Image 1 (cartoon, rainbow, N blue to C red):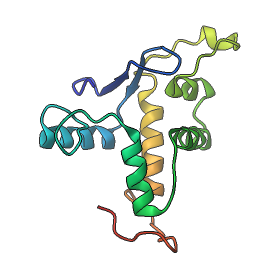
Image 2 (spheres, rainbow, N blue to C red):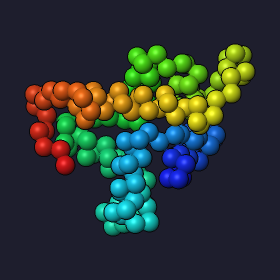
Image 3 (cartoon, helix red, strand yellow):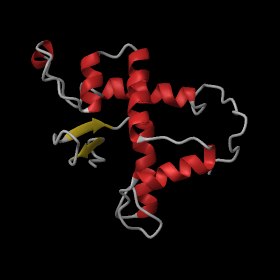
Image 4 (cartoon, rainbow, N blue to C red):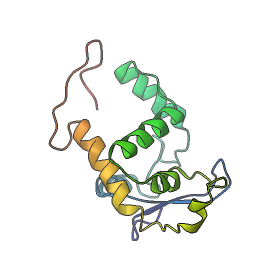
Length: 149
């Protein structure tokens, strides 16, 4: 993670292509705060070691909300939000790290991580609003945990 450039780099991806993502403001501030608290790793386990297993986050989400989520569910939700915001299909493909091998036009479009910063920020703002963290209204769903830590 390059906190100076506000870029997250994922090296071990499914399609074996290094994936660089711009960090939106809210996420950057959150990660910076976590780094200051945790020390060496921005995302660390309770013992301070590197945190890499999503299954622990999945279990916590289920315990707090009763909802089971998968990484694929999160990717689909992210892509749907981007579509609702009228973000170009090529930007969405890049944000999801999809190869465009069957798309001739896509081969001509050269997007950089900086080109993706504004779409990523818009998607983040969308979720913050929908989640009631920015200018929205939170509606408590019946049967769901009311206290989130």
